[in-house]
Image (cartoon, rainbow over all chains, first blue to last red; front, side):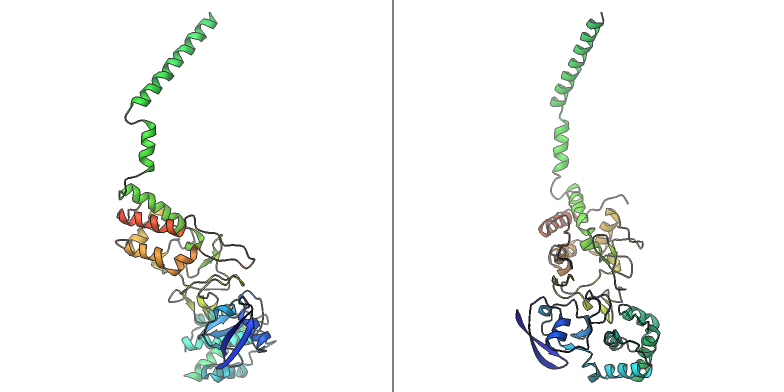
Amino acid sequence: METYKLTVNGQAKEVTVDPGTPLLWALREDLKMTGTKYGCGISACGACTVHLGGIATRSCVVPVSLVGDRPIVTIEGIGQDPVGRAVQNAWVLEDVVQCGYCQSGQIMSAVALLKRTPRPTDTNIEESMGGNICRCGTYVRIREAIKSAAQQLT
Amino acid sequence: MVHRSTAMLRRFFILILVGCAAWSAASPGALGQDTATKEVPVQGSREAGLAAWERVYSVLTHPRCINCHTATNYPQQGDDRHRHLFNVVRGPEDKGVPALNCATCHQGANADSTGVPGAPNWRLAPLSMKWQSPDDRILSSAQVCRSLTNRAKNGSGILDHHEKESLVLWAFQPGRRRDGSARSLPPLTHDELVAATRVWVEAGTPCPQNH
C-alpha cells in the first residue's frame, strides 16, 4: 500500500491504496465520490470518464500511481466550470437522461469536446462521443444537448 | 555378363565423383567460399546495408510497431492487428480527438494492473510514415524503405528515432495484457535494431529494388 496525494475538484485529497488500483476505485471507494460510474472496467464504455490534467480520461484503467500531480475533475466538480455548467443545463433542457447510469461519463466527454471544439459538427460529436456507450440509446438527445450547450457558450 | 557390366558402371560413377570433388576443391569459386562471401558482406557496402535493412524491416513490420503506422484514420491493436476498439480515430494531430484522445487511456507508462500500454506522447505515426496500404496490408520492404528514405534523407533522423524515441523504446518493453500475459516482442532486441539501423545508414540507406 502507498499513500498518494491527489487534487480532486480543486481540493487536496489523500488515498492509501495499492499502486495498481485504478483511479476509479480510489474515487469511489476511498474518497466516496460515487458520481463517476463503473461500467465495463476495460475503458470500453466511457462511464468512468473524468478529466485528468484537462484530458477526458477513463479512470477505470489508470492506476493511481500514474496520476502524478495532474488535477482531477469529476462529475461532482464539473459544474464549477462555465462549460461544464452549460453542458449540465443543456442536459436538463433537452431532457437527455433516461436511466442515467452513463450520463456522468457522457457529460465529462461532452465538456472535453466543447473545450477544444466550441462549435462541433455532427462528425466532431460522433468521433468524440463515439467511445461513450448508452444502453438507453439517448444519443440523439446527447447530440442536441451538445449543440445547445455550444450555442449557450457563444 | 550382367555382373561384369554392373561392376564397370559402378567404377565409372566412382571415377566421376572423385573427379568432381577434386575440381570443386581446386576451383577458386568453390561453393564454400561463395557462401562465406555472401554471409559476411563488406562493411559499408550496399550488400551490407541491404542485409541490415531487412533486419530493420522485420522490426518495423512487427505489430508492436506497425499497429500505429496505419494508412487509415484508426490505429490497430494486438498481434492480429485488429482495428482499435472503442471507435478510436486518428484525429487532426494523430493523437485522437477531444474526449477520445490516445491519452484518454494511454498514460506515460505501462499500466500493467489494468493491461493498458503506455509511454510518453502516445500517438499514431503521421500518414507520411504509413507502412500499410489503406486495406491494412503491410507494404513491401522496398516500399517501407522508400518511405523512410524520402523522409529522412541521410538517415541520421531515423537512427536517432530508433535510438531514443519513447514509443520505439516502448516496443521492446510493451508490458502486460489485461490477463497478465506478456505482449510479444519484435524479432530483434533494441540494441540489435539500433546496430542494424546504423549499418544501414552508414551504407547510405540502400533500398531493395523490387516492389
